[in-house]
Image (cartoon, one colour):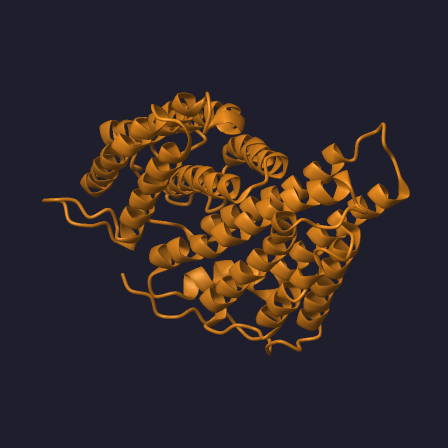
Length: 393
């Protein structure tokens, strides 16, 4: 059949991610590592908000590129051009991250807008199906609006830039949630994206693996070879154990049955887009966890500053929030182990001035172990088939 970027695919073509998409993901490994490192190095409430803005920008680029791949043949050069363009722009954005709110703001904004405007324009020009050309016209319309705020923010320093970029990314996410409503073109509906359940589910799982890898990479990079101590090695071991446990918590049942849930949904494309939200929350939690890992390994015996403690607790807690959202998306219900785990992690907050960071990290790991064991023993929810909720088109 003829696909949407003008290249031919067989009707029996693969419904799994193309090998080329794994190459594409390498750029986002770098992006997440840089975000986590930057957050741990300049940890304030303002820098946390700024990191969130940058994270949301990278996430939207990844999501739109991954969704568009269902209507492209990434095994052929014509389908790869757009992805290479995105990779180039994402590298520019990653390089700019450490000073995105200082001297490299223009570089970040230009890289981001080049990706969004360039990708949508390329798919608009090369597309053969009218409905998909209209889809990219809608995206261009909204990026044109948000682009004003992106560019304006790039030319002003400090807090005004943060406010303008927060406005820009809010516009884009609001537009995406509403289907990019555009005068005379209406709004996009889920089936226009033609998302293939098995392929999209595998892409989401690959994204989670990338984010888990960021925690491990960050731990390894922070464990400096010229300062080996037993406490630092213990912190490194706890970081690895936490990553393993979060992988187990993710994949058990909901992560495993996500492809079945997409197929069982009355609106698979719309369901796939809703599932992206839960994965976005989990990846954000893993980036926070990576930043917290760097703080603990750097000085395991130091009492946690409130901002540091918030990062240490916020990462695993946010991961469990996203995992609960995924469980509801797949089963229409949530295991009680998720809110219990979140509450227990929150109860560690009063220990910040008293306990060393290493002890807090150990307690967090034990809570994650308890959640994983409860899942394995089916204490939280009875196992059953995927039963996704009804979603609007």
